[in-house]
Image (cartoon, rainbow, N blue to C red):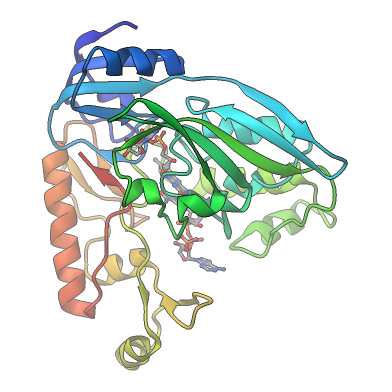
Length: 336
Ligand code: FAD
Ligand code: NAP
């Protein structure tokens, strides 16, 4: 185990924010974690790919940077394959691996940045699919006691961009390995969302494969989303609010063009990006930080910004949206 003193985290978070980690420790195995715990390191924070955090100040204490690698098949039958993946693998590399093996389940989650260990944290989702649909179980280490625990799907309390690890168990566990159950046969593709079908049709694909769907999603994402290597961001800053039907009906009388989606439980999901745009924030910036000009849900750092200013902007957006629509929006990004 090697401790790196006073490390600038600029290259380790996709907002590209420059803050100092007092002690940064790369973690290659469970043993490295046990060593840190035996040494009494505290407080501990865990860093994956840094694509879902907003750094508002220096990180004191010990920052464990997950680098646990490996993808292996641990069980299979004629229909399915159970794989185990090191938490430090890049999520998109796992998706590409699954596609190279012609295994279905993760294709709609193509090109999501970050690590495998963070995927269950907020139950990553895109294009109508969430990781919980293929998730089998994970291994995590309880940091206060140094004991290993297995969490099965139902233990994780997965919800819309939520899990037990963002709530009751926040900052308590280091996720080391995640297991997914992928389909060899009879895999049902989900191509109903957004422009997937249009892209497939424009490429004359009538009977798409898993790879075709992944390629279509990569094409859509590359054209729509700001690339963090070009402009610092952490994807969607806020979660889409879900409101009850009576509030929705009242709001729709005032905003008849408001986009909405039925949530499947009688409630209605409103795209937070639309609310932020209507509140007048789309494209607003001070030259250092701001709201993306095309995607109002994405807050950006143009290079020289500070996390505390992005956070102040997020709070202002939240207040204005609450005032205008009586809808309280909540960050998806973890504020440090
Ligand atoms: P980090 O940002 O490093 O950490 C996030 C949180 O997880 C922190 O609280 C951290 O402490 C914790 N954590 C990380 N690793 C571990 C571990 N091994 N054990 C315990 N806790 C851990 N998200 C979506 O859901 N869908 C999308 O489509 C999507 N698109 C995105 C597009 C862009 C351009 C960007 C920048 C982000 C996007 N995101 C999306 C958000 C982000 O990519 C995901 O949330 C991703 O899972 C974060 O992974 P990470 O390794 O970067 O996590
Ligand atoms: P989009 O397709 O323009 O849609 C805007 C919003 O409307 C999305 O947030 C989405 O909700 C919702 N939506 C669209 N079609 C829907 C449908 N058929 N059923 C239910 N909800 C629908 O969104 P986008 O910004 O280009 O993103 C595309 C996908 O990638 C979305 O799933 C989005 O969540 C995901 N994504 C996530 C992040 C992140 O950081 N979390 C960043 C970029 C993209 P949902 O978000 O609930 O899907």
